[in-house]
Image (cartoon, rainbow, N blue to C red; front, side):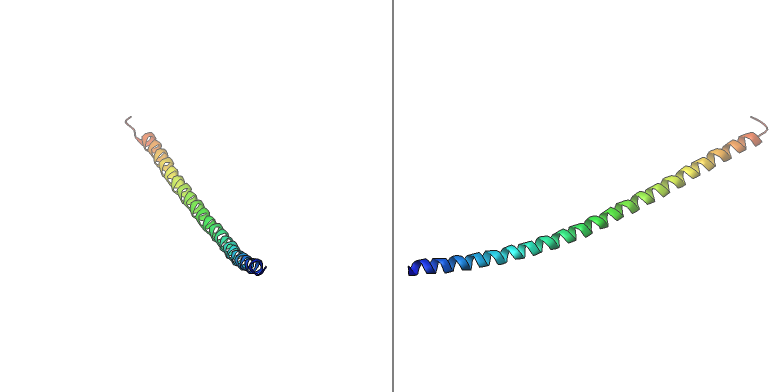
Amino acid sequence: MRGNVERVLERDQKLSQLDDRADALQQGASQFESQAAKLKRKYWWRNIKMWIILGIVAAVVIIIIAVSVSSGKNNDEDDPNP
């Protein structure tokens, strides 16, 4: 009978330790989840900024090409000897 009581107490102690470890793991998982969300948001904004910069650069290149083509046509019309 005494052995049974000792085993029950040991089991209770092990369950208590397991519960503490599970709580710590849950806390770590929550912290990981929040940090992962912050990191995801950070890189999402970085990606959006890159696309905006790329769009602006593409627009500038298109404007430069359009201006050079239109000025080239104006020079051809002004040239008396074709």
